[in-house]
Image (cartoon, rainbow, N blue to C red):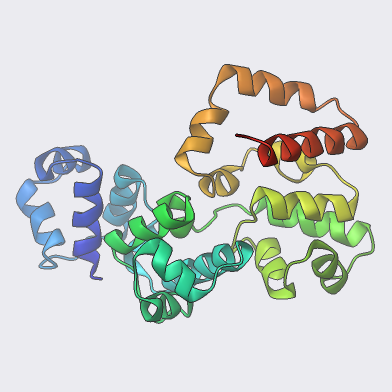
Length: 252
């Protein structure tokens, strides 16, 4: 997908007119139109401004490396949910061959494909696009792992994830979901809060959550409940988790 088409598709997806975006960028609508039609090449500074206005990473606009990162994140999420390519194909309404090429970094998904992937896996589009910026979670995880005397092999085995995925988490290339991170925290005998929630850079994890979950987390009652949980001991937390699992299994 060309640079111009990416800009145009995300502008339309955001509901922003050509004239409005051009005004925010301080350029003429005709110049922006020329960029979208690949008749003009924007400067690096203009690309950064476009990325900021459209809330998409610049490396997604210009680089092929992001295709590899998107594929890794797609594969991580699929395997984490124990889905085959065929099952993912049915969920996302996309050909299995196309999904396999995306996972291998051989094909770049357009906006429509990204929407189908995010809806099928119940994550935000940002999860597939964001390069991760700072890697506070990965660095903290690696630091705790080494301090506990764990190798990548032993921690991966205990957490029931692959060594490759653990290395990708530590390097910041993919983000773990809550269940995976909880398993890792349990093996390392540390708190989930220390690994993630005390960090100002929690965007990667939040990006893996669906819109329903994000709306729930914004609820004041839910936030008040989460604040109470921080004082619980590990045994208390396990009891609460077991109760929640029991409640979900026995819902009518």
